[in-house]
Length: 373
Image 1 (spheres, rainbow, N blue to C red):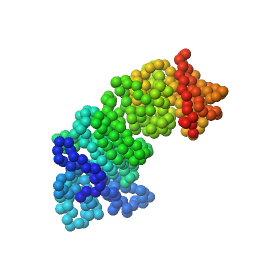
Image 2: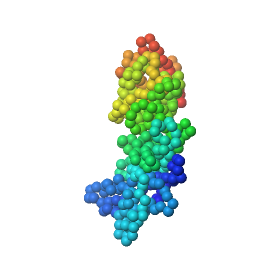
Image 3: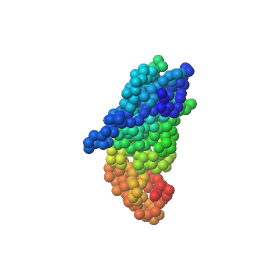
Image 4: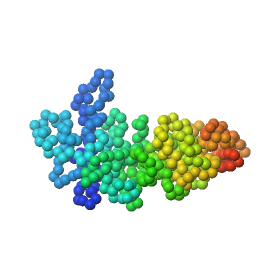
């Protein structure tokens, strides 16, 4: 009665065996294949059925496949079987039904102390759907337990955008000794780390506004809010931050968090042409604050100099009223500054020296040849 359970785990403090099972495909196919005139793509029954399952496996238990799904619901193909009611009666329903076609590849019971109140809960890696008209799953969630039974679920890290663009397909989630979580995914063949850093509300990977204020390199993308970074930043800075400035070479230097918030907001809206929620802007602002050492400092920004698509254009941000010059050999070019944004078309060959001046303060950064296409 099991279709596809890829990882078995033991619930802490017990001998209970648990696992996530993939639900079956084309649940509504018997009817949907008849088609609707002018709308052959319709699959409203299959889209939401059957649920994938979190199961507690017991010796001799029967879990329904292929005849019965979810909460003892027969598949249409087997409704005429003489023993279908007996099969439904014998089926052990899931302890927790999850999203249809989310494709849960793994679960991990949490025994750390980094995520508050999570001891004994389970984290689940969902590979993501193919048998739905709108992509679903593609996430890592936390399933809440009480008295040995699940009662709720919250997505912690999402790997698909609202427009259906896929940024990753989680395969497994495991706990590190420090209580953080490692997430493997096979869309981009990467491993992500999920940390709890405190503060804020809402789901998704939390931002990096660390109260410790320890300086970290700007290339530490593990600190960034993953979904927000992927939607708004990866296009120019690279999916792994390969075009971000590292260490002291590129410091975000703004006098207040409020100012940095406004510049972050403008950059997100201007570069991605997407609607950014205030929560996303706050999360990315917190990340910007964290990578410069916990609090803003100075009064000049040379925050980012990066390629604009495939054109020979450098662009970045600076405080209003700044002047920006680019030197390449004997050639010096002054950039156009519009509000918090500057850009310049470059005809010379790299490396370039970018200088931003504001009210007598100056910041300089070398743009290396290896970043030029």
